[in-house]
Length: 176
Image 1 (cartoon, rainbow, N blue to C red):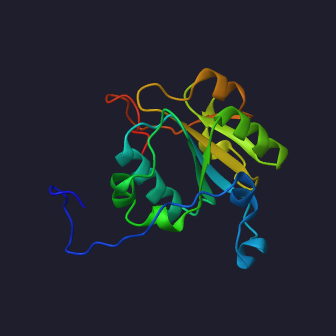
Image 2 (cartoon, rainbow, N blue to C red):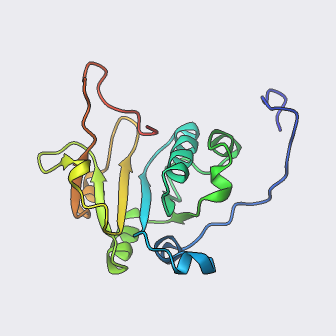
């Protein structure tokens, strides 16, 4: 804990984060996961750079029932103390896979029966509520300011947007 750390008087040493493989995100790793009836819902992050955004995404993904999160190994925020604190503990509860190449990871997920959805505004994008949520899905969220990279988007089966009631401030923050 650094000198400027804000805390509630308790510090815990957790050790290094243990990443899981993609198959674990799809099929689960515990015995009770094997009988899981819900289809996989995975969140893949394409170049998220702010550790606070990463932490907020981990927290939301956990609370909304995601099977896990995929983060790139390079040019992206990692699960640091800041991300872990922002996640309010979700970083310790939600399976996280770290991949060297997101496009290859999406191809592997396709082979595992997971449909890939790029959440970004394009002509082909439709409201996210129109995507069949009964299928195993990976939602690909793009970087702050840049969105989903073209090559990543090209390797997705669907393109979706989250409709906004107003547009004067641009779009949602990726962590939302």
